[in-house]
Each structure stands twice: as structure tokens, then as C-alpha cells.
Length: 243
Length: 212
Image (tube, rainbow over all chains, first blue to last red; front, side):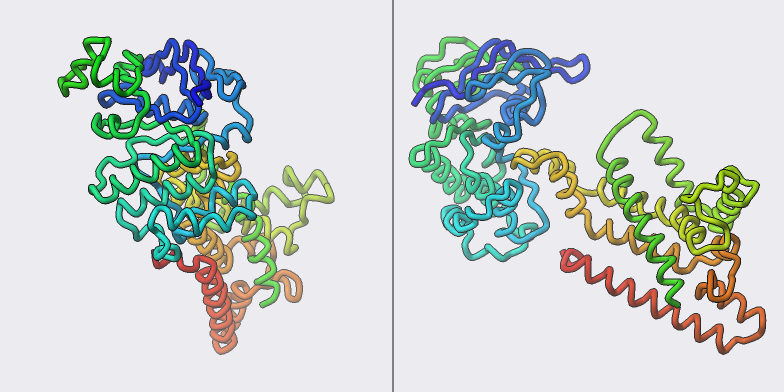
């Protein structure tokens, strides 16, 4: 535990002339839950897209499992497939729940892992809806399908972008329990973007505050909330506006 | 009847092979000149078939730019191959245009989410086309409608030669002119039945996606 899985060095991301991310240094440790908190527009989702190799950094390097990825150095397909994301608003395929969960395995040609689908559906409480059309599900059920289709791939890193925003307390609780179990029992590293500091406190081992694309402070969850080093972190933890 | 099916079938196949990738390209990518290509494609969607026939006729005639080359690969006028060429030019903008619209109607976040699940760029395109399948099949239906009912272009480039280039539509025109209304109506019923059967088959391809 605690060996760095990701190491970001001098990473920036620009869209045209607008710089949305500038991270001097960040490490994400193996088997940890790192919560990224900060106001809207702080660059949290952009950082997740970079970590999932969905877009390249404008400058700098992202070192993942010892492989350096940069503006000109794209990751191999195999490396890219070790990371996946659960998005805030899941877009499911126009297929049954079962086929949505099977989709990622199908992409990899992993037909032998199909037997795991039943297990995963049971874990997310969707066994009875396996043959339902995914587009007919409620928001909470759809998010659990999104979680299941990521879980069945057994990624090294699971990125979660506001996975419980707009969900009812039952679904929030269920997803939090699954996420905790995935980390503790399966050993999956989790990076969780959340607006909810209580959720960050409940789940994360470490917490990072992002403001205007920069990391203000990264610390163990207890220190982050109880002994923040930066006055902006202290203000954020107190629920004050830190824009 | 068989010639009608062969000519329209091959033309539709070619239109699909050209039109679906072109529609997907226009719907999914952004490049310099894309708007111009779309404008040309839209014009092609509304092109009068007889003008396409005239264009193909002039190109393929012995003194035309293609016909004068005398190449093996270029079809002669008054052959089924010339009719297929004209019908392909009529149908592929329809297939491409409707495919582009269908692809653009797919939730734009799907692309990122499919990539995040580990799809290659090719697998991503296939996933988007699969999500847009109702519209993509409509594009093929529109292309089929454009070619099976077409008369002006095939008359011009095919010449309506008996046992060679006479198809159902040109036969209907001929029989009507000769006053053989019974035969013309019978041919019309066959044409409509063919169209209905082909569209039923395509509806089957759309499957349950129509109900979602």
C-alpha cells in the first residue's frame, strides 16, 4: 500500500487560451481513496479526464505504473484499459442492463469473465433488473449499472466524478458501501470527485482541494478537515466561499 | 423485376458502403471544409434524378470525359452498370445525410463514456452507430426509396432496352404510353409489393430499438 500509482509532474491543460489545470506535483497512491474537492470549475473533472487518458495534458507528464504519458506520448490501449470512470450522469447503451455490464468485457474480448456479471449485478442490487432495458431505469439504478459496468472490468483505478450527486439517500448509501468494499476487499484505487465534504470525510483516506486548476492542499483526511494548513482549505472546510 | 432488384440492390449496397461512413465522419468529426461538404451533400439529397441521369449520360457517352477514356472499369452507357452508377449518385447523399443526423442525435457524452470503458476509436464509432441504428436504418430506407422508385435517370442512362436495361419503373412508363394500363397497373403493384417487402425487412433490422 501507498506506493505511488500515478505521479503528475508539471501538468497543465489548456483549451485554446484558457488554462483550466496547472498541477505542479500530485501523487496518487496505490489502494487509497483520494477525494478531490473544490468548487465548480476548479478543474476536478478535467483532472479525471487526464487520469483516464481521455485527453492528453498540454504540458507535463503523467507517470502511471512506471510509464510516462505526455502531450506527445499516448498510453497503450492496455494501459488505458486499467483505468475507468463512473460519470456523474451515466449514459447507458440502448440495451438490457446485463448487456450494458457485459459491454466492457466484449470490447476486450473477455468472454470468459461473463460469469462475473451475475456477481456484480448482485453486489449493486440489480439482479432482478438484469433483463430490463437500461434506458427505463431510475437515476439511482442507472448509476448502479454504470458502477457495475466499471466494476466487472476489475480496473486498477476507478475514477468517480460526482457519482452520487442528485441521488436519493438510499442510493448514496448503497454506492458508498460498494465503493468502500471495492477499495478494502478488491484493492482498487479510487479517485473521487465530490462537492460533498461530508462524503469526502466518510470515504477518503486523503483529500485534495483544487481551486482555479491548482492544488491548494493535499493531506490525510483527518488532517485536511481538522488541521488544514492553508487558510483557503480552512475556509472551504468551514463551508465558506473560497472563490 | 429481377433486374430492378439487382440494379437497385447493388446501388443501395454501394450507397450504404459510401454513405454510412461519410455520414458518421461528418457527424462525429470537425474539420476544415466540413460545412461545405455538408452543403454539397444536402444539395445531393434534393438533386433531381433526371439531372443526375443527364450528368452520368454526358460523362459516360463516347465523347464524354469518362467514356472517351475507354477504360474497362468505366461502364458503358445503356448497361445495368451505368444505371447502378446513376442510382448510387442519387442515393448515397440520402444515406449520408440521414446517417449524419442520426449520429449527431446520440448523446455526446456517450463517446467519452465508451472510451472510458476501454473502447478503441473504431469500437467507439461502432457503438455510436449502434445507438443511432434506428436513424441509420431510416437512412438506408430513404436510399432504397430513392432508387427503387427512380425512373428519369435509369431511362436516360439505361435506355429502357428490353431484356437488358428495362426495369419496373421504365416498363410502367412504356406500357402506359402504349395504353396497356392493365399491365402498367400490374407492374406498379409488383413494384409497391417489392418496396413493402424490402421495408418490412429493414423494419425487422431496427428490431426493438423502435419501441425504446
